[in-house]
Length: 126
Image (cartoon, rainbow, N blue to C red):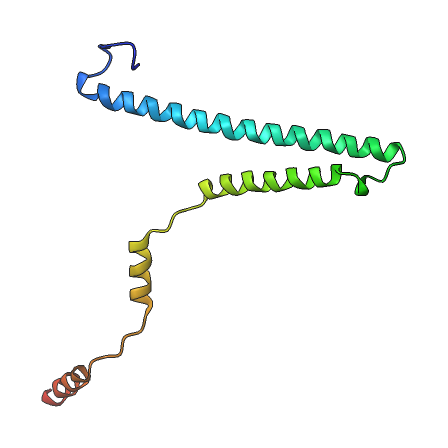
């Protein structure tokens, strides 16, 4: 779209908006590619090291005393970091205005002293 020039399928006024939208989509796609690539790389590394763990066990070597254990733990830490990043992006955001209105309306406020006198005076006149 950005490199195509004028297209008669839509009004000229929205061309700039469409170009910006296209660039934004490209940025999101790039970010998703990066996150997916990181996840795939971590799964591959974890799988490979797990298979090496099994190989060591079949050869009679205690894998708990081998450096592969630290490597598996390091990969697990990075997997948790990636999950935290993706969870933060999915988490809802706080609407401060709505929260403050909710708290304000939920708090009890005592009646002013004048309000009870006005009610009593109204009853005595009837």
